[in-house]
Length: 396
Ligand code: ADP
Image (cartoon, rainbow, N blue to C red; front, side, top):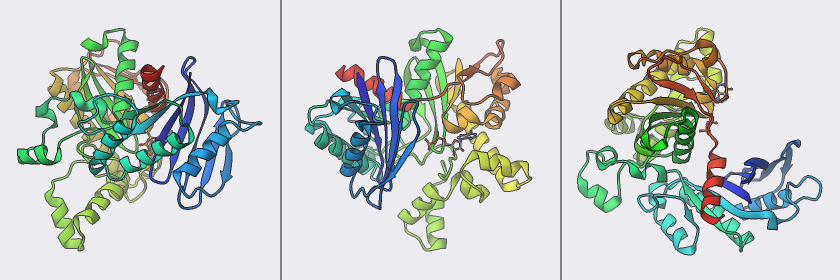
């Protein structure tokens, strides 16, 4: 079955068509600047990337252009839309209402809408994308795959904040965690690689991308993760601060004459390694700048790695041990100096890296020695494939 995977943001929409039998990507691309002017990027398997500038006032026009490109006589990956068997949608926040992927119905959409409060920037955009697809592909079954669902197995002691209990009861304020599709995909793959049952393995997944989070997966279940009510908590990220003392918010607000939303915008968009270094949020730029002696770029890298190592240590404690540590996503898969700096801080776990293996990029690989007490792997994530698999499992 061919699955159209959609990841819809407020002004962008990423898509892939995946043949679920061969698990090959038949076509992929994105729509950018939706509601501003509009640009479609389309690339069929083995073909050239095509870029078309065309007005996209709403997501419906964007989806319509994607479907046209997919069925274009010359370069389309499909002969007709009948070849799309199902659509899998990434949905950021499922609150406590969704513990697994779900076939989309009117009822389900209403419940997703009830979670909008928890992810005001992301969920409304996801819903717009779902509605646009439902309008244009009326008879095609659709599935929502939630970033939060995998973490719904966390125990209460891990997901509650130390604030009055009534806020949990009244407003559902708690840790939810994100990147669940990736943490689930990578931890399952780890079990396959090491040849042990998923249900009896302790894995720590370090998803280090522009957004970054760590997850403790014990016996196939997420038992703790570093992001919280929103993706702002936890690690230092590209432009997000990660953990700070909440008092910092009032302090900056008073000094800079901002309201809470203004400070949160700084913590989300102007902080992290970019805010510290003043150079970039991209680790390639940071590495280059640090190599040229830029001390703030070096500090940003050191702070990032220190925070990752600290969370790994915390999750070893949470699980009372660890069998495998896996690095994934843009930085986790590509940046050898980060993996080395993190693992150098984890010598107490009996970890030894093989330097030349660590110096490769983007490949599935064991980078620790065979006698290392904890195995360390690079495992490329593939959230689109994970969404396609979930979709087929539900509607196939
Ligand atoms: P997201 O999906 O959260 O946008 P990604 O997982 O794509 O993030 O990771 C993006 C980050 O990965 C970039 O900001 C960059 O720092 C890092 N990255 C990507 N490719 C490389 C590379 N070849 N070498 C070093 N870092 C890389």
